[in-house]
Image 1 (cartoon, rainbow, N blue to C red):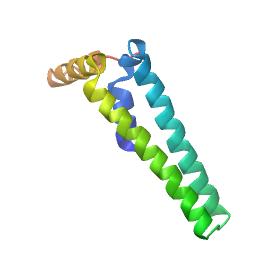
Image 2: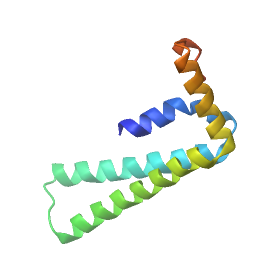
Image 3: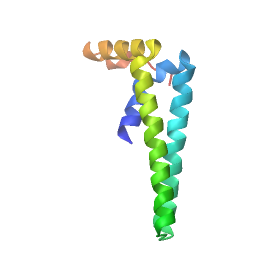
Image 4: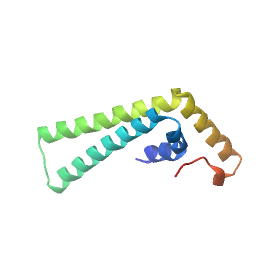
Length: 103
């Protein structure tokens, strides 16, 4: 998921200051991994049927919920908003090498 990677890159500095962001990101990545792994297993094993479909929809919904909560947090958390604004300012200054990151 490209948006998730972008959000992770842009707000990685927030990890050092916002434990809630870090926790939400972990939950989101876990939900995405669970959905992706189960989808791959279902394809590989050629699993079909209503039960498999319901399970995959449930995993997809869990990821969507986690991702929505993460997005909302990054728009409402003062720390995360500040980091995002700093990154935007730096990017607009055409100095991507100075981009805030703890990676």
